[in-house]
Image 1 (cartoon, helix red, strand yellow):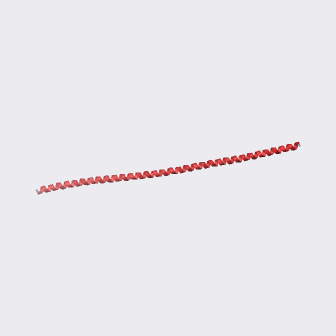
Image 2 (cartoon, helix red, strand yellow):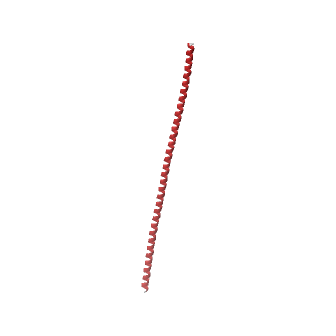
Image 3 (cartoon, one colour):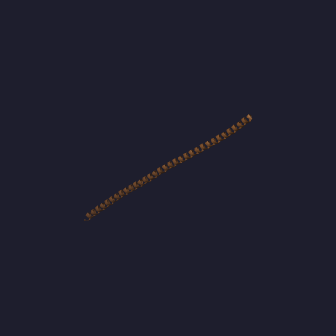
Length: 121
């Protein structure tokens, strides 16, 4: 009878031990699943952070390119104005030279006319 009780106690102990091992195994699996989920969440947050940083960098580049485009356009406008001013100055100089030449020719014609008038008189 006592051997039967010992055997019964041994079986109960082994059953309890198996149950505890099963619970420990489930707890270990749950901890691993939790750690995996936490790691995945951290990776997702890191990816979102990296994407945000990339977007910010892209926006900076776009803003810089806009500034470059505006500067280039202004420089082109200034260059065009400089060329127009140079052309206007050249045209004014040419016009002044032509006017002086006409005045010279008119003065010469007047001198000739006076000279001819004197010779006739």
